[in-house]
Length: 632
Image (cartoon, rainbow, N blue to C red; front, side, top):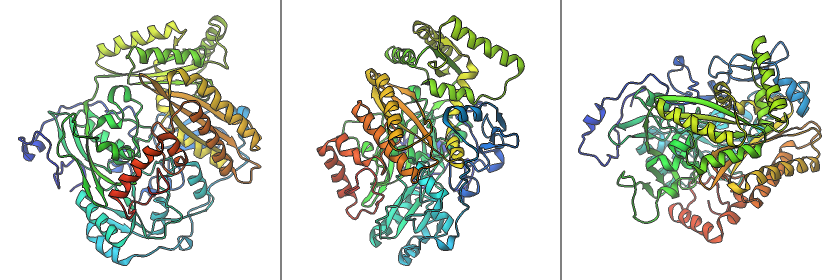
């Protein structure tokens, strides 16, 4: 094992074309390509040793919020909101003159209501470690590092739900893991899990820590020693197969690190979840993640070829890497979405593709959200969707406009002309306009043909091209939007997003009903200011779409704002389910949505999950209690 780009064959499961020796595999020549293989930001700099974050991740990442410590929305000396940072994002160093007035006017945002985070705690005052010296000594030879340091325990006690971060910021620490362990290989994990089984220790797998379903929280009722198994030192590409276009990786590799290394060989996976900068391949598999470019590359279940997972009763893996099989139910589908309840994912074989020759952004403006839905529905029906196609409602459109940097006098003038053209000559209403962002990938000829087809379809529904720059800005906004929530925390504002999937004929009604329900619930719970409520269609399918909802409010005057938020979100989820939406499209269940699992899957479906858990893990070694509270 070494740092950098070494191809590593330790404990390798040989691919089906084993006639090519391992030595030959390491000597495979790759095409060179200077293009970046991902549309997402590669936000760790060259000076940071080409790794998203170090083993002490709080040195680079926020311990009580999203992303990098040096990046985020802040109030500068001019009284304007600025995005800080050292060039990690396209917005870095940009002053956003319109953003603060927009938030103040529409949502009562008030920078006088300061609620800054408390500093890191006195580590001696944290909940005590439930020691297990026998276990520690048994696993020490199989760890890159083992720690009971207070800060390590805090960092590994949470994900990124609203209530988890609010608790950290206000100095409230619940059940913490007792030890954090970083394994170095698949065999290390087997030894660590076996020792846990022999000594009845609870193990919670941990990747990038970006989970938003409460899945990483330690159960408060757990009295055994809890180990957080941090997989991020298992971060190597083990081999790349040119002939079959696959890559075999350790599951702790972070998305941006994987894409950076693949791009040096001329490849990409094309999997770009919003959290790609920080989330790991193992986390993608464990939550059944979806990426923004799934129209070309597929969701994680489409990309996975082979998985190795260590369970309490041994390693689960297939003996082959063929494209399809008919040998009973697919064991991968027990692993995908298992959320740490059945075992630890250690290695994954994924499909890869050559980096596309061309990448082009675009955007279309529609008179209403309903017109935009007709457009994306027709695109899905004709099966001509680009890599990414996302439709924003009016509230998100206006938010995006407010986050535009200050323009030159000429650009301001031309922007005003565009508004006049849309409102006076095309009859668009400023409070109804919706926008669709596009990302097209392929050869130059393919992109041109697709672009013409998309804009032709858009014109049938009154759509007007909005320009490439707006499309790119809208796409890149996805990777900084979580930083907005952290700024809100600083000024008495709570916010979060949640998602669902829904049939096409219910998209419009679902958006209206959920937004109306949130407004009513805010009034019922005493939220005094106008809440932020917006929606977008983010992924399209033959039979339906993924929808995101963004929701936030000023919580001044509320005695328990997190409880209020959770009550309102639960009501919104009830509305989603009543309107034909799913419990989750890709965020997963964790602990915050498990109450609806039985109604979503049926009694028999729940029994199937419970039976697998009981057989694989009768001692509940993987005791995170996600998915189903009874046994999982």
